[in-house]
Length: 292
Ligand code: HEC
Image (cartoon, rainbow, N blue to C red; front, side, top):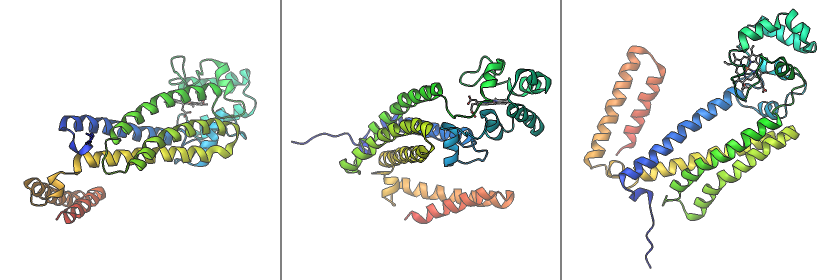
């Protein structure tokens, strides 16, 4: 008995546009998420770029220092001047007492440089208008707190599972990937998501689990990229005379357009000297040579 199956390549254009719009939007969201990770966790050890140390500091904490000090060397580095940071750190090291807070001029620095963000209206970050909340950051840095982990865990589980619901659903209509691999690619992000969240909690207990955070995060990114590329490829590049039939008018137009783009890029590279234009010119030239 013939079974009718939905195939990405055979979909009506409106549905393809809908799917592609969704995929593109979540991909941009993913890029912003990565940038955010780079600037919060990535800066935890004071150096840009995500390392195991960053993950250990974020979840387990940097137990050789105070949170305040670690942040001033990390993601809060540029908020005040070097000298001001030094005054704050000195005060934190000396116990972070309330009289020194006023006398050593720390209060003034915090009020002018930090409370623009760290005020009562801020959610998720301490309010330095309250001395007790500032004082807490002068204790030993034990990484993420129980309440922040609980909050981020449930937001991630609910939010990310929805993203993979739709990315997976769209990808499930792909026809060039065998069913077995399709099932793996669709199931993997959920497994990695669970491992990712679990590994945050484990890293809170012991720093050796930080590697698991990296593995799970990369696995999730990899499955996302795979499903994304396969879906877009099947929707727009398969059975499309533009790409499969070199004699079609569309393919000829495309080829001419790529040639023009390559020339334009080279022209602007020559007059502006911008390297990226040169690279784009080379890219278009390569595309041109690939088209029969
Ligand atoms: C532009 C807004 C902004 C300013 C100004 C700012 N912060 Fe922050 N701060 C944040 C955000 C957002 C976070 C949470 C992300 C992170 O930890 O990097 C944060 C986190 C922190 C944390 C960690 C809190 C926690 O519970 O994990 C400390 C400590 C901190 N800031 C100290 C400071 C100090 C000290 C200053 C002033 C010298 C300052 N911040 C200025 C936005 C700001």
